[in-house]
Image (tube, rainbow, N blue to C red; front, side, top):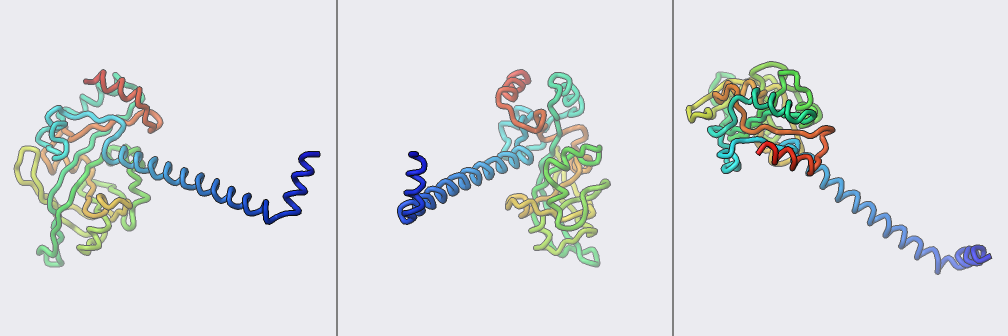
Length: 251
């Protein structure tokens, strides 16, 4: 009876019932939408940071850690394969991947081989050619490509979209990278542009280049070495307690 009485009141006097219902509905929708949007943005940002910059865990030398902002490859980890084997044995289920960070100058020649343009770039080397498809998927390289293809063979390079558009670089072009080895000597090498990538992050799109880690080791005289060793927990999901346990054990 009470329900029928209330229902008749709502139906007969819409001016007193319809507006509050609409206002409440809009308010609930707005709150849920904003909550989902913010949570999604934060989740994507955290995941992207882990995939590109931090991993769930990170192993480096103490000296490198003290100067991490400078990415000092002269203080890099040596005998990386041996270290990865040991960590894999001690912590099964955790995926350990080497990354090399470097910077330098990219030279774009004209048809006569003379310098047409130059620009500073920040590079990252990933393990692609050994068959490690997880790295390819982790950084979303295939979906980020706007032209060309992923790195399929040695001496290929991926260039960010803003740099490519600014300097007129296309897939198939030959470019020259100038930098320095981990021992401070000058180094340079020619690469074929495999693809142009757009990651949607200004820091990467402005002047980033990507190499396979085998090419970077040759370029930077870092045979068997790596700047930082990233660890990813099972399921690619961060677990603070497990990460802290592994961290304390390794340290």
